[in-house]
Image 1 (spheres, one colour):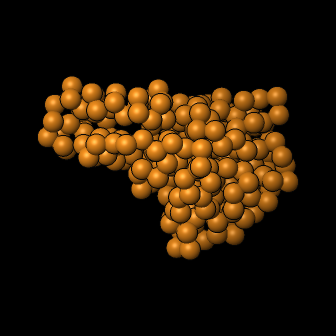
Image 2 (spheres, one colour):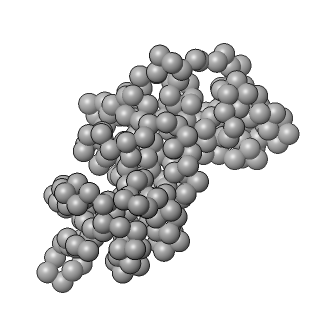
Length: 233
């Protein structure tokens, strides 16, 4: 275990988000830790190289943000994400990975992750995602969809050529936009002034048109196709 902290008393300044990095590539973890601590609003307060260390450090330092590799050596990083969420339920849990398949985004969300960042993305993109992510929902880095952050930290979407864009009705677009904001069917029904059963019918239609099995997959695929403005967050 390695700890990097601000202040001689081991405390971080007010407004600084305390980050734990869990990655079995020691050089990557240490470089990311130092990069985070060089930012005015982040402090790397711990580095762990395996699941057991990660859980122990999380319990000790109670970080605000945890960055964990999906594929730790001989261990499943998503299981680590689940354990961390149990220890610090209010923390942002960001998974970094070489995988770009939307299915991994779904798996990460199911494991309790709240941010998804491709490992081959830029440091500026990772910092942007970590700043914007909350402890609920799922924020996906633009490069996961083949895009890259815009000049002002915005998201430039480049739909994949392999992604077929379904034709949606105006109401389906409204329901999809609500799903993209993380709203449940009951909340969508209240906002749009329609029944819950009707809302669920639209959701079912969207799943069929997008050829997915869950609402999260629908949002991910819709983001990839450029049908909604932003990923979950």
